[in-house]
Amino acid sequence: MGVYVNQAGYLLKGEKRAVLTSPSGRFFLEDEEGKEVYRGEVREFGFDRSSGDQVGTADFSEFETPGVYRVCAEGDAENGGVSEKSLCFPVGGNVYDKLLHDLMKAYYFLRCGCELKPEYAGEYVHAACHTGYASEWENPSVKVEVSGGWHDAGDYGRYITAGACALAHLLYAYKMFPKTMKELQLQIPESGSGVPDVLSECRVELEWFLKMQKSDGGVYHKATTARHAAFVMPEEDREPLYVLPVSSMATADLAAVCALASTIYRPYDGAFADRLAQAAEKSYQWLKENPEFLGFRNPPGCGTGEYGERDDLSNRFWAAAELYALTGEERYHRDLEKALEQSFPLTALGYGEVGGFGLLAYLLSGRKQKEELRERFLEAFVKEAAQRVRVSESCGYGVSMMEWEYFWGSNMGVMKHGMTFAIADVLGLEDRVRKAAETAELPKKWRWPGEPEEEVVPGPREQRGWNMRDHAAAQLDYLMGLNALGISYVTGNGERAYNNPHLRPAYADGIEACMPGMVSGGPSAHPADPDGKRLVPEGTPSMKSFVDDWRCYSLNEITIYWNSPAVFVTAYLKEKAGGR
Image (tube, rainbow, N blue to C red):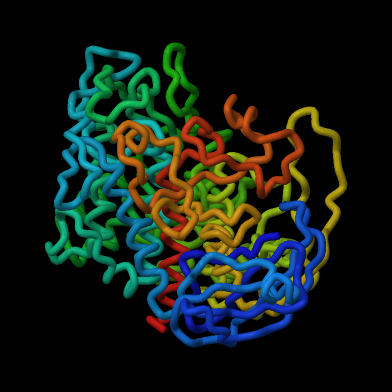
């Protein structure tokens, strides 16, 4: 039996719950001295398909006394009246402060091209890395200075489409939750400059973006070595660097994110805002002159991350929407309308599909909007949020994932759904979502190649009457330990946090504790790496298909765009709470 909780803690207001396996009839809270402070009934859910558990919920939402507590499942007298206890967790107004700090400070630890010094990095120091010129892959005689930015993931590569996704999450978090993001102090070299630390950190990546733009506006897809480095410190990776060919996805994503950033940075640095706007317009002009899809595949001899996409439809739409938000010019509005004649996922918030960023650009722009277009975009978010409400109600842990949706990077899926709930709240769509959820269908099952078609069988439905805030909080609860393994998927946060990510400096630095704030990719029912396949027994329930092992890259890698949606959701919840 287990009693699982959000190990970061619970805010004073809003839903607070634990999940129990082999449910007891009653539960109680005890404080740090073992004193009972609250008692309640366990609400039985039944069989949860994603975890393979029989589960029940201990709801203590009405308990609003700050402190540190455990949830105790009531047992028989022979066991002292307790059958199982949860890990300790706080209740209070600032329980997300450390988590948000660490999630965002993680980007400093992933900086490329500079020394990490002890006054900012503590013990996680290293020398400057990847500072030499890069050669064009197709024409090695051409040298390009592309130092800077963030290492993308467990490797030392840097990728435009991945970086654009992370920047979009972070910059929209700044735009939508300004009080929380402006006040966030990261203790980085730029702190105290008068510019919010979050923007200083994002500028590190944006400056690298500008270096990746060619004179004609096209954008190199990535900057990497030919092969992933061994598990060495970044300054020990001395293989030749290359910039890989221009792609239309990378070019569109740079145009979009630089346009978005230009408006945000203008109050602090007009010259930088102008550079961003000029870069956005230059790349957009390249897109106009090159209307055909120019995708990306690794050329022979290159084995680093590919980040290929099937098309660039959502990328071009996002670029047009952000340029319209930046300039208000009608030509960009015509282009975004024309882009909508093609089919792509409207609400997607990932690196492969970015339509949701285009919707946000339009809806939050303050520019003149066509009512029918605005309504179409709002309804898209209503439909997506309503479906995810329906999914969360069919999961005993409250997570908005079907059992077949746990694949490589599943934690990003969870956090993106949390973003969807937050966006629906900010856009004032809660009542519409609640009504739509009554008839929303579960998503159709995605099948692996050769897998037989299988009917999606819904589990029990627990209609909790949650609002959007509570749905978003449930996704963060999952990330922070309210899951079938009781693991916090953020290093250094929670009493039982994972600690061994597939992350080269975390392995090579010889320090037992991983640098804090790194979000794991999380469970995958179909591990893609040999060690994951070996260590996760066949038939393991999806939510339990995880191993905290540095070798298992399809389970336990980190990326900049897995941290960023967690920053967005945490910032939303903190801003929503207003410090309570």
